[in-house]
Structure formats: C-alpha cells, structure tokens
Length: 157
Image (cartoon, rainbow, N blue to C red; front, side, top):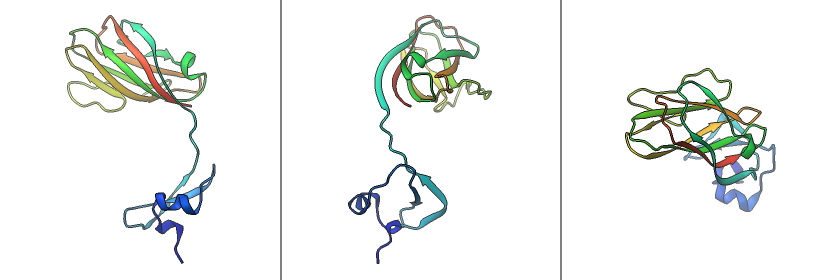
C-alpha cells in the first residue's frame, strides 16, 4: 500500500485533490512526514497584478501611513510594492504593517523584505508588505527625496 505522505505533490494530483481547509503534512525530500507541521490548504484565487501608482511626492522621514485601500480594498492584503529613488541622493526606505512598532529601517548595510537600500542613483526596488485590516501600511525613508514614487505591482487579499 502506498501512503499519500510518501508521494510527491505532482503525483498526488492524480490521486486526490485538496479542498479548502484540508490539513496535510509537509514532507521533506526523503519523504519523511514532519509530524509537528500541519498546513491548512486554501485555494488562492485573489492574486491581482496591477501596476498602479499610489504615491508621487517627497518621501517621509518619519513612519507615515500610506493608504492602499483604493487599490487593494479596506481589508488585509499582502502587497508587492515598487519604490523609486529618483534622485542622486543616497537613502534607504522601509515599510511595515500599520500599527507595527518594529523599526525596519536599516543603516549602511543589510535590508531584506521590509527594508530596502537605495543607491545614489535612479533606482527601483521591490518590497513585500502586509496591510492592516483597513488596507494601510506605514513607510519612511532616511532622506526626504522629492519625486519618490510607490507603485502597487500585485496583491493578494
């Protein structure tokens, strides 16, 4: 008898299809079940790709709300943003969920998904952030750069 947990995902589609709220075990490359990790399956049909400019102006240097709800709705969403540094001024930009108190802004090195480093040139960066339940994030930059743009590239509700 072949156990489902011993099968690759591609083989499983021939045997069964997961439905919303089904639980399934994550297996490693040796096909050993990870007993402590169960994942709830959810179909994601809410991906929207929409390059929409939502900000064009001077980047704030203190944590400032940025309302994305006109595009993503007044709900929680995972949002992929493109942020520009249009000037020849070195600076960093950071984003976080509205209400978060972690300070993601980085110094001379580092970065990641919540904080991005801009070079002293026209530069575009992509960052992933979640909104609060009203569709709002917070953002700030190390320099008040005029002509900064923020575009929503895609989002999932």
